[in-house]
Amino acid sequence: MLSVVVDVGGTNIRLGVLNLSNGEIDQVKEYLCSEFTTLENAIEQYFVTLPASVAHLCIGIACPVEGDEVKMVNFHWQFSQAALKNKFALKSLYVINDYTAISLAVPFLDETQQIKVGGGSIVDNAMKAVFGPGTGLGVSHLIKQDDKWISLDGEGGHISFAPNNRQQAEVLLILQEQFGHVSTERLLSGQGIVNIYQALCKLKEQPVQYDEAAQITTAAVNNECEMAEQTLNLFCQAMGSFAGNLVLNLDCRGGVYIAGGIVPRFLEFFENSEFRQYFEAKGRLQEYLSHIPAYVITHKNPGLLGAAVYLRQELS
Image (cartoon, rainbow, N blue to C red; front, top):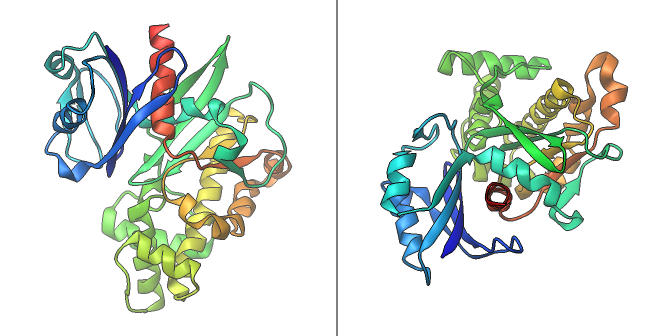
């Protein structure tokens, strides 16, 4: 019988078969969430491709996980854990927040699966902060307990956005007119890039040329549009401020790790941006933060890796 791990984001779902003895994941497939009416349909399509039945299933999903009913924030899927376990006749089912999974992958990344962006060396076994802009903004922290890492997950992407310069404050005012409460996710996400761009175009009385994050990012990286460049600059500034706050919250001398599918698309731009400047701009704590390293995770499937770590811990 097989063990399967699943990573469910707001856009894509990835599934793989876990070898419990060595932790390797193979037979990985990726689908668009929009291709399926329910999560159960997506899982069922994957299961029929496997050579044996599935006994153990661990799902990392982009939403709070409290009780039996699970409902996604940035997509329409919802399900009962009990019904899902019963439908597929599973021996065990574990459903965790997607950033619980991603954070658990961090201690197992090698140097080729992450890129350092400034700072000094990590302090061994010190707390780590993990966040990532994607469809939404995921956040978690890691703490070492005995011989294993424990994820402290939450919904930090929904904290109120706090501007740190005049341009950010002006963008915030425009977004408040549109949304009322402006969470950090309203800026640090794929849709957030679009929100920033449209707000800046309104401020500068410029025509809106793009309506997708990928278009804006490409235009910025290729120096094709000043508004797009300003958008990505502000995005990186806001990421820096947010990352610095996460580190200060829990004294994360183990570093801060950036996941999600957005930043790896413009790594060179990001490395040369004001991310570190805004990350360290914490007044009396600037010197402290200058020593904290930041990393961009480049592993293709950290959510699957973390779900595998969680499942192996639970079944050991």
